[in-house]
Amino acid sequence: MKSRSISAICTVALCVLRGSTVNAEADATKPPADVSTSAESSSKPNIVFIMSDDQDYEMDSLDYMPLLRKYISDEGTSFARHYATTAQCCPSRTSLWTGKTAHNTNVTDVVAPHGAWVKFVSQGLNENYFPIWLSNHGYNTYYTGKFLNGQNKDSYGKNVAHALMKGWTSADVLLEPYTYNYNQPGMKRDNANFKLYNNYTTDVISTKGIDYINDAHQAGKPFFVGIVPMAPHVQTWPANGDAAPNPPEHLPISAPRHSHMFPNITVPHTVNFNPNKTTTGGWVGKLPLLDAEQLDHTNLYYRRRLQALQAVDELVEAVVQRLGELKLLDNTYIIYTTDNGFHLGQYRIPSGKGCAYETDVHIPFMVRGPGVAKGVKRTDVVTNHVDVAPTLITLAGLPLNHAFDGTPMPIGKAATAAHIPHEHVGIEFWGEPEFDGAGQLHLKGNTYKAMRIIGTGEGAFNLAYIVWCNGDHELYDMTSDPYQVDNLMLLGNSSSSDTRITIAGKAYPVKKVRNRLDGLVQAVKKCDEGACVKPWSTLHPKGDVSTLAEAMKAEFDQYYNQLAKMEFEDDICLPYYNAAAEGPIPKPFGS
Image 1 (spheres, helix red, strand yellow):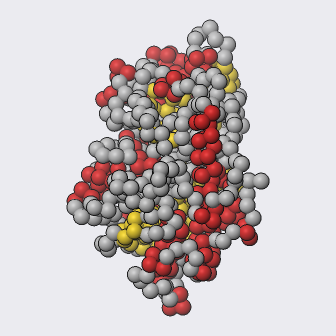
Image 2 (tube, one colour):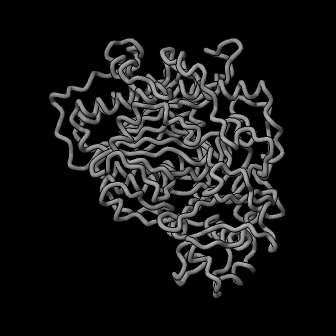
Image 3 (tube, one colour):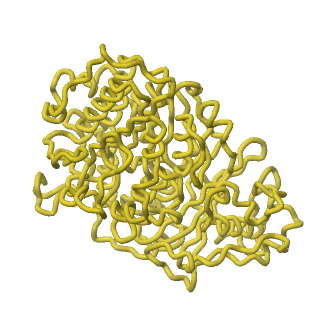
């Protein structure tokens, strides 16, 4: 049975009250909120944003979180077609908070010089992102948990390159080298000294998140509270070995109360799991089958991930219950998501992320709050993390006067009115793939541009297209091939092939579809602002094409046949974004 009994667990909310899970020193620096003297809440809505780290959608992790289902998805709306535009934490989180794609933020890695906190600061993003916009319009803003890699206990807040996070009324963040240490997290609140906690990390973050909600309520202003645990990310330890077992386990770690759960569970054996035959491109197509030892480790990793998510599930309940006690639920949006997806043995890939496959880019996103439909699963809209910042701005009732590459998601009346429907998500990556707990693997050439394009309603279609830096291409019709195992670029790219792809009720040769997708990828690869939401306008500026179905008209055949194919200059796989290496944006139709 996938779910556990809700009544059988000790929730974080109850455990904290009983003093059984979190050391009192975690919140001893300030008095508890006096709810009885709190000012009345503003008419502006509050927002609580909960984000896990590396959570999958495709391997059913949501099915093992009954409290998340009870308190968020059953009481709100789930966006079943939500995507990360870059399947890696720092680029994805930066896009989420700024509303800009990674090729526009230029935060393209998890380490310097091309990523992490120092890159975020050097790009000026610490001066111009979501919490600053909110605080400038009367909101109090709070954050606790993981923000970005590279925030280190020895440098964070101590110099210009490693400044404190700006825009936050208060922020208490996980710092390296203790960010990914499950049982000894290290944190720094604002200008206070760095502090180590000998408690389970998700419980510490949960307690701090509840404290921030209390503080925000007492302050009497509309608020945003970000609560961001690092589960189910793999555990790592400081270089000096502090708090590491001998030998250390490079796996997710659960709270002790959850370590017995799911003893026999294994990774879902879908057709893309460790397949005997593969048609994938790039370095993925060269991987050998996982052996018995690797498969055992993969299954253990999967169990540990699910166990680690149980404390996150309890965190959700604690947040909702506290908001209810404070009578804030009716005026608070609660959002749950993650930064990127994850793979475990699919396409023979060891545990990790960074690929363009559905496992890595298809992620959870759900919301409850005022005006949000209850128990609804939206499959009629395509959304992504670049849409999150404009969504939050609109939910807060603020003007959309920033240079967003996304559009508000249809949540609530104002955001729905501002939403621009789109059927595509541009996906990009530069550098090496990430293998968690498999440090011996260092594979180059994970630079690619990709596209998810989904037509909804009558004549729906569902396509995935990947262009690798080494010249390989992958195209999947995910209506008939949801696990991406039959690469149509190998099966049907010749003019003589009888392989067809159906779009809006009409069947087209693979080559004709590929030509349109090449144009679309090229329109998105360097886009900014409105061109990212409406990329067809780059190719058809007269406005006569706004969907793939419209682009398939025969009158455009010659244009797309002659259009240069999407490729990287000289098949060079650069580990960072270089616009010149990705070719020019094509000339528009009729020019």
